[in-house]
Length: 282
Image (tube, rainbow, N blue to C red):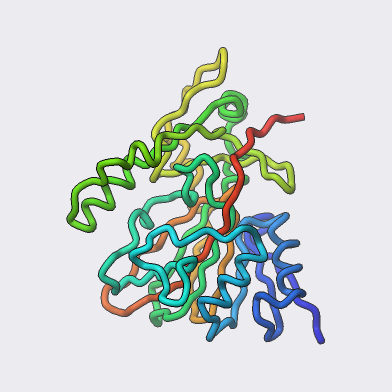
């Protein structure tokens, strides 16, 4: 049988794993995905039509500890670990139009996110990915020098108010107790490769706190503008059966603008991660 193969789509950023008809939880495919994730932030596997929610959960579990769905209003009937992202549903996903890294408001944010294309319209369906390792490498040296010791304060506040508005409900009264602000390094270490990447989020990054003896002359808005320049962004145009995996350590993402009318349904699973570590150059 032909081995699964890795093809680079964007050097050091996006790769495609070709499984030659195998399901993603096949041992050879999992090995290739794990290998590709050491050097790439986004992995694409095509041709997975018919992948069930339980099969996707089983595959995701091989990448790390499986997290429950982030919005229980939208979990799959077969599994509370699988969230159904349905643009025609009654409870829309909140915040997916903002650039973000999943669950950065937690002390131990999500590590890997997996999306599968179940029902895809004929055109106009994209997910955008921004390369945070590339953004760090391409930043001015003065930024890199001062931001390496800086801390980002990530807050659930914006999400709480967006959820209330979209569901026409009061703001969750105890959200500040359940999800107090957390501090993460603004430049984080990638655990496997040892490389550096900015850790940003339009959804949750509230402010930057400088390191001891430093000052930060770049704003949150300037950082996001730099990190999401068109040349740093991969736009994934969905086809039915696509399976996309990304590493939240070194990528931000957001949904593209959907054409009104046609349904798009994705299944979403995630793995738990550890606390982000600061990058310290040798």
